[in-house]
Amino acid sequence: MSLATIISFRPKHLSLPAMSKSKAIFNWSGGKDSSLALYEVLQKQEYKISYLLTSVNTSYNRVSMHGVRIELLEQQAKEIGIPLKQIRLPEMPSMEDYNREMFTIMKQFKDERIDYSIFGDIFLEDLKLYREQQLAQAGMQGVFPIWKRDSTELIHEFIAKGFKAILVCVNEKYLAKSFAGRLIDESFLKDLPTNVDPCGENGEYHSFVFDGPIFKNPIPFKTGEVVYRKYDKGAVDNFDTGFFYLDLIP
Image 1 (tube, rainbow, N blue to C red):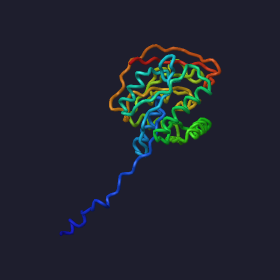
Image 2 (tube, rainbow, N blue to C red):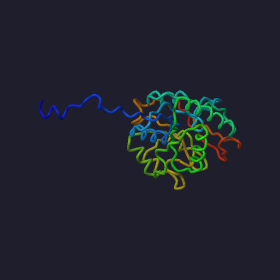
Image 3 (cartoon, rainbow, N blue to C red):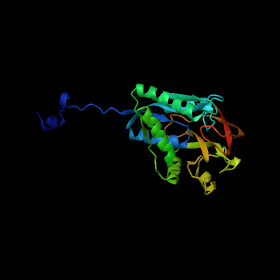
Image 4 (cartoon, rainbow, N blue to C red):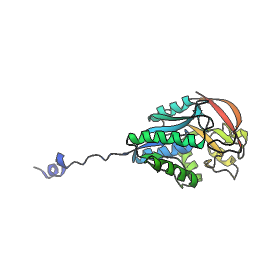
């Protein structure tokens, strides 16, 4: 037997089994933070993403807060290649209703031996704590892949990696109506007021991502009208401002 044969010999009983990944769900909004966080998770391959999870307004069949039609959300999930799960909520759910629905679906995930829930949060401490407390009740843990990353660096990384996104919701407290429909690019960043976080982490704006490295194909759509809405106090998110929504048409 030659030396090369001896070196290359690998008895079958010594081969190591492949490490199984921890099962997780990914909280998907369809926007830039979700997209970049999902990209990070898929690159590191530490978790098997069983589902994308999104809150949906049942009155309008649109993504809660973002106002994007469900058809476009479903198209995103198809191009990502991960099944979509929806938490269907009324337009103005109470905090109790929201927590109950979240607990119910998290228990379902736990029954499927899914132990982790992944978020695209960046620096809102109270929101992170709330999520972790709610997950703990269902025996699950939160994962925050872009937590405490510099938001200016994140948004430049988002653009550099080839992601493309359009603003679909603009908070009038921070941005003018004209920002609805803007693409997230270097020109957009230059035009942002100094009091606006580049990633909109304080709720200044929300976006819809229609292309990038997580998609097999771009998401086609047409732009519709811009609609203004102001919410009554008492909803899950207690807003004291109005929002401009850009309708995207599949």
